[in-house]
Length: 102
Image (tube, rainbow, N blue to C red; front, side, top):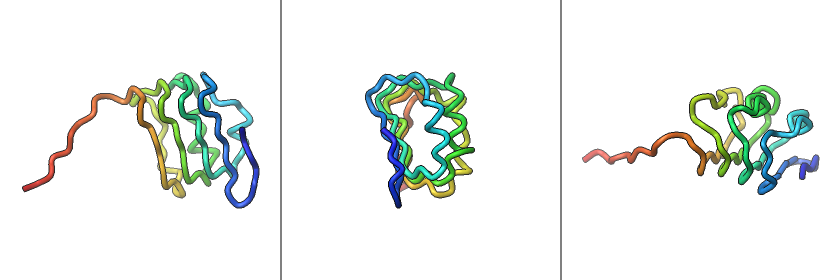
């Protein structure tokens, strides 16, 4: 469900088993929140690569619990407004424990 409400347009489609983002989502250039968690998105979905180029106002992106791999995730550097990014429960590689210095 995508809502073009002011001041925080949002799009949430959790648990729909989406294999790729619907094309119309990338046309929502004023979108502030994108939640496509708990779906079946993969790196093969080229529309995911379009997020940083076309959705520059995003503040929150939730891509958790999909089938994403670390090797070909898009660069998120154009998303200068991004405050929250959730990539948990994906196939991003092994976690490493960070040790505090003594």
